[in-house]
Length: 322
Image (tube, rainbow, N blue to C red; front, side, top):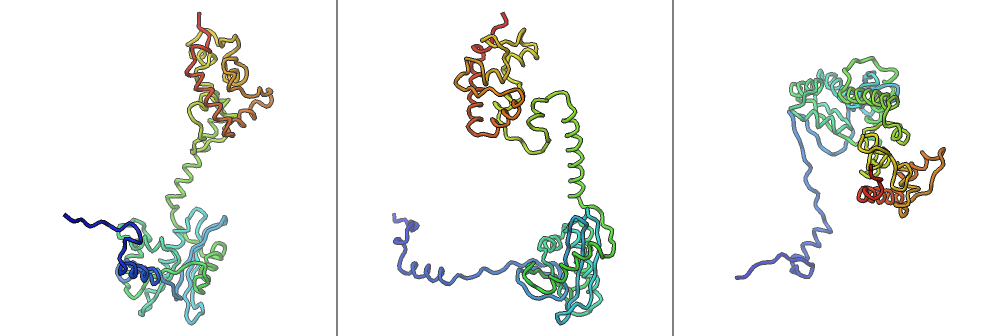
């Protein structure tokens, strides 16, 4: 029985296939652009000069929304809205689209509305969107089929887009006040900020974890990147006589060498851990010494080996209760 194998090298191809492949590489064909429709509004990724661009802008002073109507390369009408600083750029841009559609709804001729926000167009094309302004836009587009939405690339010199951009920036200080509810993203950020503030206050004024607080004074949702051995060394919560005494698992906190068995002792003085010793720090530089260890790759490796030895040979280095 004869089976066909797929060619794995260029030499395995027939001369006909090699010729077709060279032609395809030298003259690549562009794939057809995808198009999504909702009523009469389409979203195509090609660029032309528009007649009614919209724009939204946000700075530390606030958020601005604007659109302008162009005719023969001149602005014949415009609108500027001033939003609160808590409002998002998405809200400003979607509001500008809604106000532009309202202005164009009274004109009974084909009107093209241009925007550089592809995300807004995708939301408008979504029939399951629950955003109130988006639902209003969808209703207006279905009832005014002479209005078309188009996308153009931002900041490449299109006259209408640059004019709308400038109007949106000016709207932050000169626009008509417009009240919109705060977006969900703003509320989440406020809740997160309040939670971190409470957490920071509890961390600063707590009675436990003070050694860790000296190294990590600021709370954060991001982990510090310490492994199990490093956490035991920094917190002191490990197989150390000083910690076992606190937990009433020992009657003393002495190491087998006779000195107090805390993390610093095993890292600098204990004769049983001589192979992994660090230089003994002064009292004033103890905190900086520990920070340097935790930020140096080779020091962290040595610290991990030290802690693994302590865990494995705990019966050797910890003096018996009796």
